[in-house]
Amino acid sequence: MISKVFFYLLSAGLIFLSLVMGDWIQTFFTLSVPGSVIGLLILFLGLVSGIVKPHWVQPSASLLIKYMILLFIPISAGLMNHYHMLLDNALAIVVSIVLGSLFILIVLSLALDKLLAEDK
Image (tube, rainbow, N blue to C red; front, top):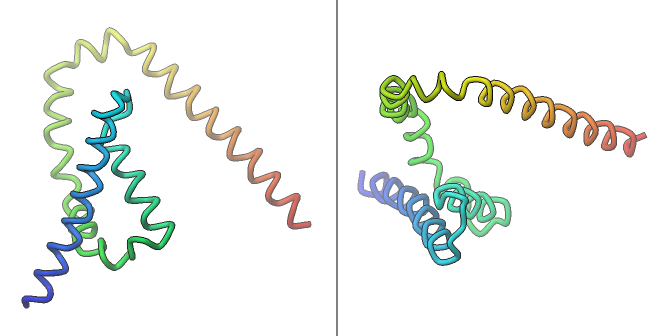
């Protein structure tokens, strides 16, 4: 029981540490990218490089993913309160969604085409 609690605290601590580091970097360099995104990139780089082992963050990450829908309730309530802003900017939102999706589709298809051409 104690070891299970320890692993939950360790995994939550690593996730929280990456968030704090991202917030610090964002504040120190006055970047327009949110600190949580920078923290996510720090955690990703730690996992890819092997500095952070996946099983170290797995307990808390699984718990967060399991109850992720609860994290969207405040956002949904905020959208309902400010729906007039969404309606005022509907054209820009739809255009950015369509163009962004097309851009990603084109870039991924070109990258996949290049990767498959190298295999032959």
